[in-house]
Amino acid sequence: MTEPAPWSVWTRPRPEPRRRAPGVDQYVAAALAVADAEGLAAVSMRRVASSLGSGTASLYRYITNRDELVDLMVDAAQGEDPLPEPTRDWRVDLATVAHTLRATLLRHPWLAGELAGRPSLGPHSLRRSEAALRAADGLTPDITLAAQALGVVHAYVLGSVASQQAARSAEQRTGLTEEQWQRSVGPYISEVIAAGEHPMLARRVLEADEPDPDAEFAFGLDCVLDGLAARTGR
Image (cartoon, rainbow, N blue to C red):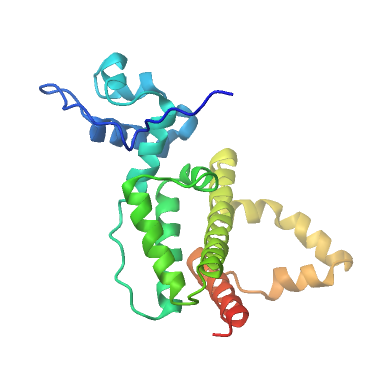
């Protein structure tokens, strides 16, 4: 079995960029722009280098392969927002963690899939993880339970954002806004309601309000935090 290499992108010294040549930060920013516009699959070493008018060999001076480039992209995205100051109110602090993560994921639609796997170990990611654990520590001093509580919050954010992004993808795929799509299926839904076989669905369509995504997210987050409070006796 091959042992993993002892070096990583976080421990290897960075060479200084040559005169007027792009450096690591410029390459990562270019990769972020490609991923945000076209998805992570569109990011390649050649594509990133060419977007800066650089040769691929120059990029390889700083970054060994695409996996390292993605690691750098994830960490850069995690460092875009300043870390919030703790308030000593666990509920406020965990809510801030959730809202900050959501904002980052909505800016970078490709990022959720990367954060759902192995944890990122870059400096920005570590600082954000430390701040999030500190917020959870206000809920419970039990570090295992605090980490589990933070995992629940993260899972809720990832799920909520995935639903919102799916709606965006459907709009892009069909060319119809949500309102246009609802009008297009309106006659069919009217027939379903008139048949009387789905009375709860009929009430949902005819009587329920349609909160915007921000309000929907805030409601779900309150439910998550209420559950954590009940679980920990807070």
